[in-house]
Amino acid sequence: MDAPKLQLFDNILSNGIDKSEYLLCYEIDAHQAKRIEPNAEFFLGGHLFSGKKENGQGTVILPAGIYLFSQQRKTLNSKECIEMAIEQQKDGLWERFKLEPRLYIRFLHEDNSPVTQVFRPVII
Image (cartoon, rainbow, N blue to C red; front, side):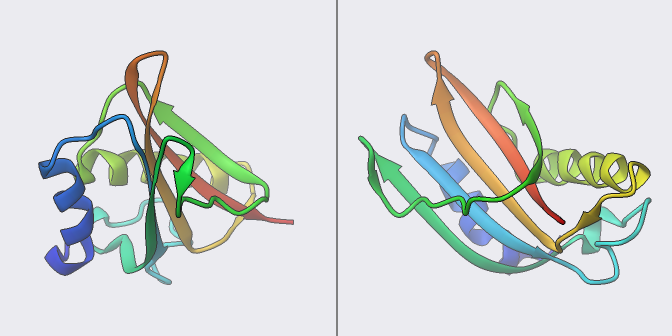
């Protein structure tokens, strides 16, 4: 995976996830976005934006829409997030959803435990 694309991601994780909410948005490589077996090394395209929300205040905005959604109740590293996003893509393509080439990754705390969520917009 391309280090500059994941620099912000890795910086957030290296500083430790606090009780804040973080949202990262990435393009998905155009060739990988439509493949049932995408290559994890080339899956992410460019970093589009990121934000942080503390105590209900901040720049985290997940646009309204219809998404494929997956989560795990722990903080995942970049490799694990990409693996989860690829499994999500496989499921979506298998179900014949038309997916936008964009991936949202959100870190937050629910019920005093860390959660990692991935969202993939569905085109209607």
